[in-house]
Length: 201
Image (tube, rainbow, N blue to C red):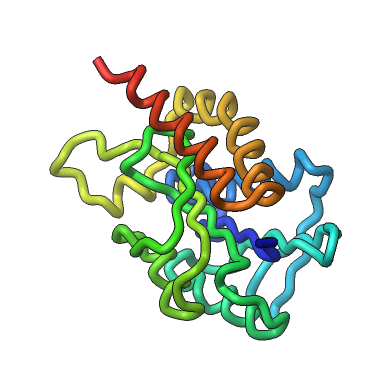
């Protein structure tokens, strides 16, 4: 299977920069820069910023919505419809509070896990897309509102940790795109499982 779209989820606007919910934007910006692409084109009719990358057999689109994450399904549906791209050829980079900061897990054919951005995409293009989940850490205390947590900014220490983990995040995405779902899941998810086991007291 070849993938034709990678969308990093996040909210546009300066007030959302470096927030936990914007890890999708942060990751896809890093990946694009690492691959030598720094200029994002704005397509107003589809409500996206995009980079079109030539690949064997076609092109890969890196995508960021130009609006709010909770409406991410609308622009991705427009692109999929225009280019006749099925959901199984879409990778969604999203944040996950159940994973430690910077940890990667690749999943398919699962629900939304309460993620509104993923839910919007599921509603608009249906199941089949791949979730490239990046950990943002759990709430600091149980009583904290989930929205407050995901919209909070990373601490300087967390940002430093993410900077160190970005190469692994980029390599994991490249593995998924080059080798496919099963190979990437076997390698990345196994590594995550081993790492979590080691870090447990």
